[in-house]
Image (tube, rainbow, N blue to C red):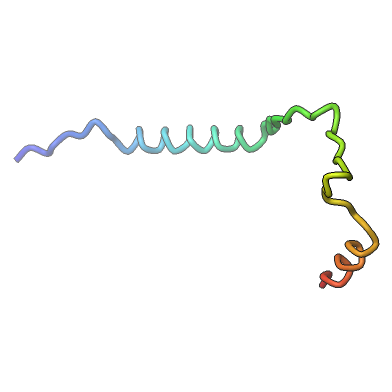
Length: 68
């Protein structure tokens, strides 16, 4: 009986594993790319006449009571 020949030899597997390891090491050493979101230049002012959120002494006292 003839042995079935495979295109995937032991030498190919080890070469591929070495290449994958080298690529993983190179990727770990490369600097990370950061994407910064655009920052809004002006902050919309809250209209106090409409009853928007305001940080008052009462609110600050409540925040202090919720701290662990």
